[in-house]
Image (cartoon, rainbow, N blue to C red; front, top):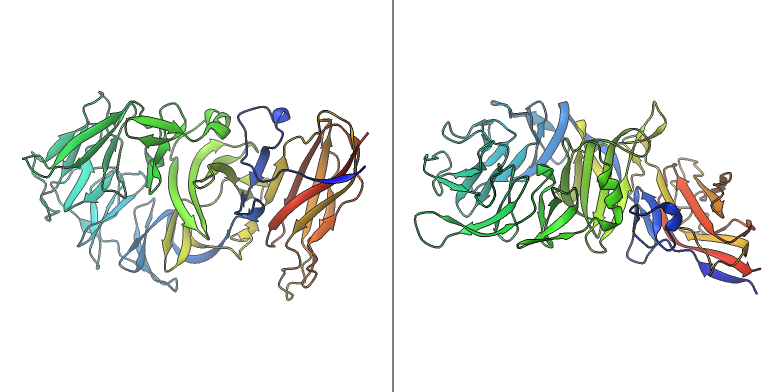
Length: 466
């Protein structure tokens, strides 16, 4: 007797095994994520918000304004209506990714050169005595900065961030490697990271040295700008190319499901990570912008779902090659109860009602594992998708399309079957695909390129054993 059975769509992508081994797991989920009821939601798109000078744009919230620093060193103040003001008196130099930290009085920025300060007018050099550094931070009255190509971190006099005595130094001495990253966790822990180790320091309640070492982790950091601290823990890409959570003196791998993908990264240059708490979700974005992706273009961008410990993929679009490419963001900032992404010479707003990336396609694509029932041949009499339909602006006149194809018995995918998502007002939630033949294993793949919301609730197949 034929019966309706659910096709699993509520799992993480699993790239760590050959795709033919997948059953309930997902083979791909691009520009979408598993929502709180186990369905799929399209990832928010990007719309232009403000234009600044050329270069990659990195953003930070400071005193109710957005501060944007470009990879060419210009510094901009951006208001909530998108008005921009060049506040560069001293450029941010060094050629690295800018790191921001705010004290009680000013914003500090470092990118491999001198620390630049901004207190409300124009940028200036913080202090001639402060080291040139890639990382600057603030903790309990001290400004801290690592010395490049050394095991040392320098710090200012307390409350006086222009004074950096030569003896104000503490060292990461657990292993003989240079410190390449510095971060302050939400719990005021100071982490110094190098290629072979990570050490935690805390503020000393007494004594001549205000910082003392608490523990050392035996694994180091492969990509310095992937170190990110959240309320759930501190994460980063370890020396073994694993995305891990650092827990005291141990590391907890979080990338088992997609470790094969990380092992194939051919360039970790400029890799970065950032927590994005957005629209009811808690993600960490992990991007390797110079790595080659599965489509042969540059840019691998992954999303880690902290709540579910799931992984998804993000892509932009290469209009010349007509294929997916690097997701176009370089940074993310939450300000004015809105989400913003730094692009190339432009700042985007990330919005749930945007279904493209600044006018370029944002293709939502999903691919299941190989569904079977104890190896029995199955006749598939019907396939139905339940999702939100007809939620289209009536002024556009669009009728977006969902394309689906089937891989039966792993013989290769057949032709795309295209069905309309529904014009404005066509809100019946079920779309049927009819009979699809007979096979022992079934794999499904579908995508939407058109601008439309995606809220996929379920996929069910009406099957009968033969």
